[in-house]
Length: 355
Image (spheres, rainbow, N blue to C red):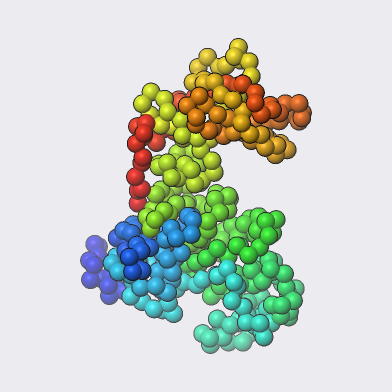
């Protein structure tokens, strides 16, 4: 049976396979277009990341999905039901914020039980459900502690347990790891992915950290100036950037021209040699001079200068020997392969954002 727009408005699901469907969404704050005509579908059970710098529109869109911001135009459907004008408390959505927002006077167990208590869940069931949520995040023994007795990572886990205890259909995460140190953040990235798989809840995650997005996500949408430049799997985003912006924002890419086309070439895909006799015959090879050398242990990162003045970044494995590092000032040749590189358009022509 085909459903009409009136059916959706009345609360009848039009497409139960999509967790969230955004259509023609616009949101401005004065003269600033925070979200500028975004169309986006997030599938049930995905770990979906909205990635971009500050001011790119990702957090505004997350708040719109949660019901914390109104829209100027467009629609938000959650599991096929139009929720565009529905208040946050009537959406089957929970949010985890960067500041945790835990109740300091309550124990960990009481914090996690809070949402169930509001829903008048019986005491025994409430306690058992909260205990299951704490077990899922690895905090079974912490239920009797107060938030100020926990580390930052533990407080983040409590906030996550409190958010998933009600089993929302969609969980929104607004840069939840931003306050953690690097080592703890990297560990929590893997934990979040594990928890998402076990809970079976659709996660929509906001971050400006490219490595974080690549590590955890099933799919990523790269935001820029209120629009989505590209959406795809981590491999697609990294290996096949559709615009120069995406190529430069996700990791490092060199924009190299050949035969009228511009290619996005990753630093690790460029071979650098000091002996012209070592140049691969099937590659595009150009002379360069090493300008900067950064030793990173397993690899060394080089910045080399071409005759045109362009700077190119090259990552070269050290092979376990310090004398493999090429010093600054050395004349070298860099080689790359157009047949295994990704073209993003004609030379000199900037690609445009794509929703």
